Amino acid sequence: MTPADLPEDDSAAEQKMRFLFALRSRGVTDARVLSVMEQVDRGLFVRGLFAERAYEDMPLPISCGQTISQPSVVGLMTQALNVQPRDTVLEVGTGSGYQAAILSHLARRVYTVDRHRRLVREAQELFREQGLVNIVAITADGSFGLPETAPFDRIIVTAAAEDPPGPLLAQLKPGGIMVVPVGQSDTVQHLIKVTRLASGYDYEELRPVRFVPLLEGVSNE
Image 1 (cartoon, rainbow, N blue to C red):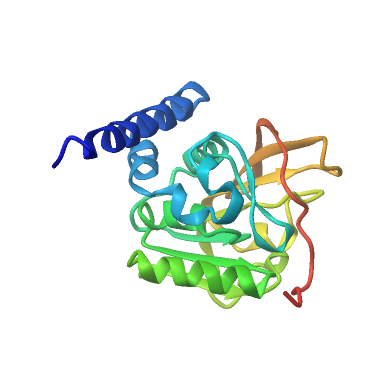
Image 2: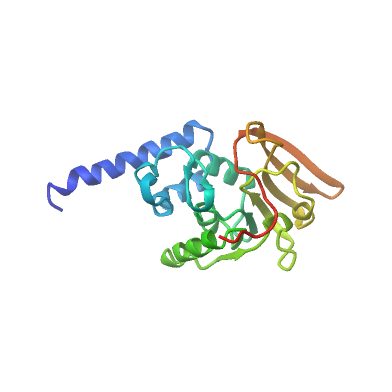
């Protein structure tokens, strides 16, 4: 290592410390989640003009008019899921692939679906580059889930629905958990944790959020 290397290395270490501090200060306290979020480089999932802001705690634009969620929201949603090592997880809304990459280090298998073909292709490339072999990325209408691979131990939805989608609730195992943003407008949304019980579902409101809407159908992009 030369002296010229040191400022860059120090800067990267400081950047990572700020990143983790922001997560903790916003309520991400689960040690496993923090460890994985330290390990998975968000910078790999942000391209173009906003790449230099990848380590800030803010949502950023990606292709197809979508966004990559702010890290603290990713952490809080992952924490609420309480993913276990043998779990099979369904993610609705692949987006950049960042959330699926986080989940892949916590679960046995992750199925992620998105209505945008381009986003799925780009995410698949990133998963291959990082050796994340336990992720299956599919272009599909995520509002209907994946009946052919259901039921799931955990379901995470990264787009806002008016109500927790019935098809997704039906694909959740007894004792399973779904985390979904719910709201009828893009200004009033709440993150909801749904636990499937023997006799129905338990709903817990976690916090206000803002996500793109959950749309039906498959995009031409």
